Amino acid sequence: MHHDHVKPFPEGFLWGASTSAYQVEGAWDEDGKGMSVQDLTEPHDGITDFKVTSDHYHHMAEDVELMAELGLKAYRFSIAWTRIIPEGVGDINRKGLEFYGDLIDRLIAVGIEPVVTMYHFDLPLALQKQGGWSNRATIDAFVDYSRVIFDAFADRVKYWLTINEQNMMVLHSAVLGTGEDVSEKSAYQQCHHMFVASSKAMKLLHETHPGCKIGPAPNIISVYPASSKPEDVAAANEWSCLRNWLYYDAYVYGRYNPIVWAYFEEHDLCPTIEPGDLEAMAEGHPDYLGMNYYATETVQAPPADMEVTSGGDQQHTQGIPGMYQSVANPNLGKTQYGWTIDPVGIRNTLCETASRYDLPILITENGLGQHDTLTEDGKVHDDYRIDFLRKHYEQARLAINDGVKLIGFCPWSYIDLVSTHEGFNKRYGFVYVDRTEDDVKELKRYKKDSFDWYKKVIATNGADLG
Ligand code: BGP
Image 1 (spheres, rainbow, N blue to C red):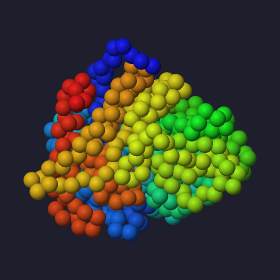
Image 2: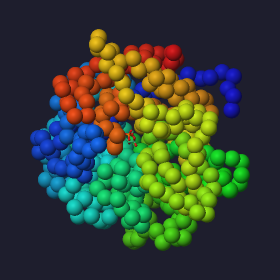
Image 3: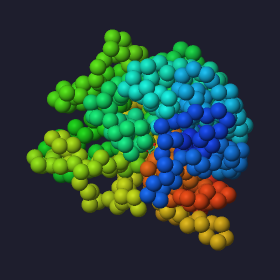
């Protein structure tokens, strides 16, 4: 809808930035940290592993100083489960608690709200060896881990996020390094266990720390029909149910989406549900919804002889025979890595989500992955990133005017880090880290042009997006 007078961003808006532990910290085997499934990744096809990354573990004080200079109001980071409980269950690693305690204290000292993701793609390897999320014991392990980190940090951390992109782990287990390319049937069983685990964690936090807020962080996007053909609209609706609403419906309403459940029945994918599981799901309620948004998808009804030759990645799928087929959207450009660029799509996605759930929403990720060039005088002229983010902020502000309770926006990423499967050269940060795929050099930090731009945006509470 058109707004004659566009209201500004609300006071207290959480101007943030995001990272995740395994992609930014490095120090993969230091100070008592156990191994996660990500630590199995080897360098391949000229792409680095996750052992050093941006070495935030050893540059944490410097990185927080730069955050303070940027003026961040919030910093979304994840806790590596294996730094806290190296084997996934059992002994607690005091040094891991100290590292995150120190980070949280430093953030608070400079007025930055910590937003903590409890688990971001880095399941402890010891749990994976016992079946990972296919094993119901992982539910209890996650709840025990939750109790440890709530007890340690919930006196200072108000905003929590349970599981990052559960939907992408279920749909793209191979790409996201979750250990194995699982069958669809077992992926949905794992998914069910994650629903129960995250619901129990939400309930636990509410019982033990009533002042805190907790929510999920799936990857949510509008799915457009390729045409006004009713069959294309049905394809878009069904894919959206399977990739988006299955997750928010389970987190918010504690139940399975009926369209998805029918798909499960049709394809013999129904998870085994033990007594008490649905009650647990119904008892965990998010206070807000995290949302990772990068790109929209456009789909049509699938041809009868449709073949799928690759699993795709977070923003790329070929389709599901009998449900939908992805097609290019002629109205949208693409990034260097083939993801569509759709700023209006963030407004569409926010409005669709708000009208379904009417909860506060925090954008937990959004950004542009692109090669950057460090000039001889130590600059990075990333006007393409500024343009990308500006357009998304403009649309987010319009979404607020449409009625969305948007409480903050945390672009991916605060600092350059290793992409999930496309290496270090796919950069997202406001801060450049000087290293290549195979040479970590000195990991010196440089402020990109987008750093100065974002600093001004934050200082004006979004009034100056220029
Ligand atoms: C999301 C993940 C992040 C992040 C981002 C960019 O799916 O939550 O961890 O990496 O996408 O994706 P990529 O690194 O594949 O470019």
